[in-house]
Structure formats: C-alpha cells, structure tokens
Length: 371
Image (tube, rainbow, N blue to C red; front, side, top):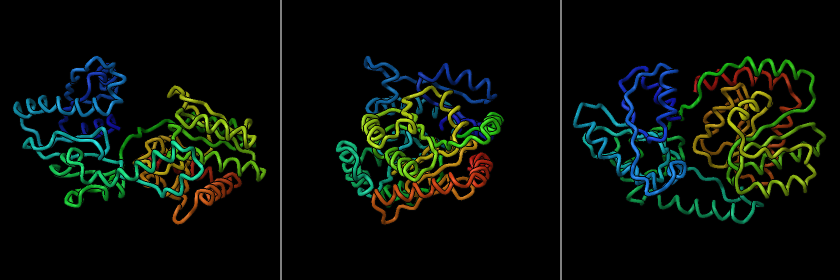
C-alpha cells in the first residue's frame, strides 16, 4: 500500500519519503525498476537490541520510531519548503501520529481500526477468539478519548478513512475534516497465466474456493469452512484452500475432521507469496467473510488477478466489491448460523452458474484498476 501511494504521488508531485532503514535494499531496487523519482530518507530509531523484523511488528517500537523521526522531519522542513506532510502507515486510528504541529498541513491515512461486527457473529468460536473481540469492541469506546491516539487527527488538515465506521470512530471535532477513501495497493497484472489455466481446466468439475489471511476469529475463515461443509452436504463438488496461519488453525483442523472434509479442505499454512499468487490463478472464487477488516487489501489483490470475491457487508472489503465482480452478503439481523447458511447459498449459486463466474472474473481486474 505504501509503495503504491509513493508510485502514484511521485508521478505528479515532488515526493520526499521517510521510512524505516530496513526497507533500503527493497526500495532502491524497486525505485530503479519502476523508474520512480523520489528522495528517500531511511531512518532507524535506536533499536534497544530488538531485531528489525520484530521492530516492524512492534506497536511500542512504532511509537518510539514516530517520536524519534519527528526531529528528522523538522530538519527537512527547515531546509526547504513543503506543501504538506502525509502520514501513511501504520494505517490505524488506534496509534499516534506525532508529525502534527510542525507548521505544515498534515494529512493522515487512510486510517482504519474503527470497524466492529455484532458480537453474535462470533458465537461458536473458541473462547479466546470471542474474548478478543469482546474486549476490542469495548476498547473502541476509548479511542475517541485517548489523548495520544487523537493528538495527530486533532491537528490534521485532512484525515482519510478506510471505512465509514472508522470515520465515525474519530472525535466529532475531527469528523468534519475526514473523508472515506479506500487504500490503493493493486498494480496492473498480466492475466495471461490465469486465462491459460482456465483453458487447461475447462471441463474440470471441482470448483475451487480460496481464503487467504491470518487464521483469526474475526477474519471469518470459520464461516468459509462452515459454508463449504454445507456445500459438500448438498452434493456440490467444491474444494476450499486456506492459505495463512494463526491461533485458529488447531480449531479449524478439528472442524475439518469433525465434518469429514479432509479431501475437500486444505490448510496450507503460511506460504511464499509466489505460491499465493499461483493459487489466485487456479481458484474460481475468493471467499473472504471477514467481520471487521478495515480495508482487506487481499480482496483488491484477488480482484486484480481476475478472481471474483464473496465478502460480507462489514468493514472495508464491501467497498471494493460490487455485483460486477463478486457478491456482498448482507448481515443485518442474522445469527452466525443464518449468516453461514446465506454465505453457502450465495456460493452454491455461483458453483451452479459457470457463465456468471466467468463474467465476474472478466470484470474483476478492470474493477480493481478503477478502485
């Protein structure tokens, strides 16, 4: 996402990028290949003995890095004139941006993290998965009052939000300066391999579903598994590939055995990116029934590869998907069991209508480019 923002902005503006020093080797080669002209400053705050890989996933280190990088930004501002500062990642309203109040308009986002799903949709999941989201929902009440998290938005000239829910989670005084806009993270993709694979598999009966993401309760992977079980019980020849790892893996493995789905569901674990891209090319439908993703970049990635998407009307994924390239499942008033049945019904309709799936696939990549 950060890369795509850099590429698109640098086409029309003079961009100075400040990022973590860990990305130097990746960025320098990519900038040359993409012929992007941008001045880059690589900054690494004192690491306190923590390995860079752990730093990049540490919320504590992120705040520390923010605090220390402020001095570098002030030096850049003193040396030349800038029209604005854009704080891009991490894209969450729960953590601070410390680049406000420097005499230059601040733009933040797109920010997410304000999304929540009805707690009834977590019924049946392991206790830890349910407890996490119960606590998370309660914590959203604190976001508007957290002085550290709201320090940046209160000083921002513009706040970009990934979803309407995240906009509403901001302090009321900030909402007037906030707009909903999706992230950009999808490059144009050569779909010739997908077309060749489709031709090679013509006449193959088994319909392939794909889920990709962390195996967490709120990601909806259990819903995808339950819907697949219903499809199999109804006599439809489908296969579900689950790419990703996480704390729900043991629970999913138990459910696969319980419902006798060993030959219909594959738990692939964390796989190399090249392998995931190949899975996009072989799948018929991307199933992503996440309950509160802010954006769902994996949805945009799937669409960009000509893969139709089935998602819920919760959070960010529904902003990327419409009837031309997939199906958005309404959740209003539904129990978890009813939602699973509705998801299975939507998938069954697609399994039994290959012409519609082909039409959705043709439109998916063009839709991703428009987004």
